[in-house]
Length: 122
Image (cartoon, rainbow, N blue to C red; front, top):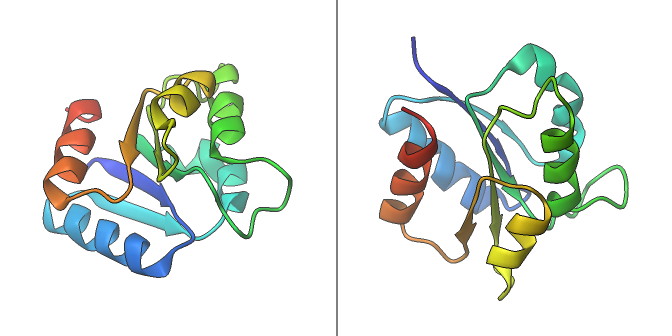
């Protein structure tokens, strides 16, 4: 059974590229352009979440860092690895403050994407 990756990215071009690469590598990919999909996290049960830090269409004032912290603070979802994706210069600190398991700095190359996903999904 394929490992499942949830990709939450509001930039369609980036999201489409990430989805294409991961599907080519054999992952089952669920994609969303906003954070509302996190309401169904318990039923989705992804093996990894790739989460954009700045979503333009979120339903609250939460950013990826805050969403990651919420996921990691919930005992029902705390074991799901979260990787924050962002172009901010302090991405390492943003990820740490959000209790994320890792980060991927934009712009990233496809090799970095693949290596990051493989690091958290075995």
